[in-house]
Image (cartoon, rainbow, N blue to C red):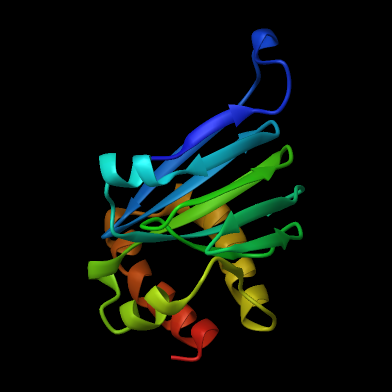
Amino acid sequence: MVDLAPLEDARAGCVATHSLWSLGAMAYSAVKAPALGFSRPAAAIRRDWIDHWMLRSGSGGSATFRGDDRVVAARPGAPVLLPCGRPHAGRRTEGNWRALFLPRDAFPRLSERLDLAPVHVVKAPYGHLLEDFMAWLDSALPTFGADDAATLPHAVSALLALSLGA
């Protein structure tokens, strides 16, 4: 889905962890990893088409994203909305990174608004609300049952609607 490139000497290896949760139609990813570059070029989109958006944030690290003819710098914790159906690239520092994968079909009421949104940092105050929600998911998801996880898309939809002014 995304091409990754280490920013340090890869021959030495690295220590990283990754957890992935299925949340109904969505997925949540939590990664602790060293600094790296990432890209989703047009060739990858043609090869692996997914009609999703990704909401990313990191704690203890910062990132720079390029897409939609823009460069966006994100402070630690700031949520960034990325359309997976459009090329984007960037770099991130070492840290803990989280992502919510948001399929179009799960958010029909928001799809038009999300389609118009370029790569961007979700601004305060709702950016802080999304940031806190994603940090809460880190601690809550390991204790969730399947029924608990299935209700999360409704909460995410409401938070996104607030954040996008929809």
